[in-house]
Image (cartoon, rainbow, N blue to C red; front, side, top):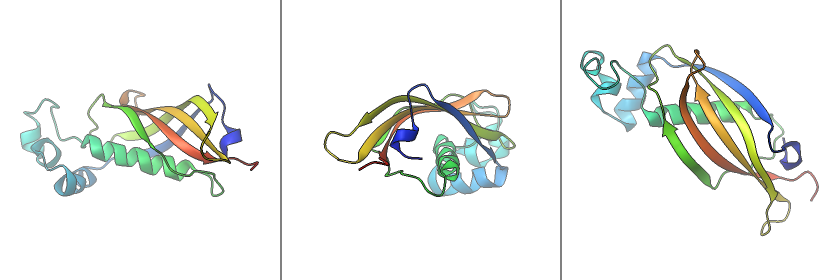
Length: 146
């Protein structure tokens, strides 16, 4: 997909990623070693009520689903960043995550010829369609016509 393939209001849904206990612990042991991500028993007494994924782990899962959703021939040129990242509900082992996407803005770059900026609002939801994470992101996209 290229810049011209997007329009404001366009929606999509993609991904189906099952989160495992071993993956939660492996990620946490490397990047976010807090007890509620590592210790099943201790996590029962946490605010979350059980072992749950790090928000950063959920973010990494989102990124993987996003990249896996891109067609082989795509115009993605990267992102200048995200806004309003929120972790809304814990992600427990066995959850199956997917992504809801909404295009909120499309504009051509004034400083980079042949490049457009796509603004997206994302919700990462569990198998019960509950939003566990949300964020707004911008992406640079190649234009078909240069």
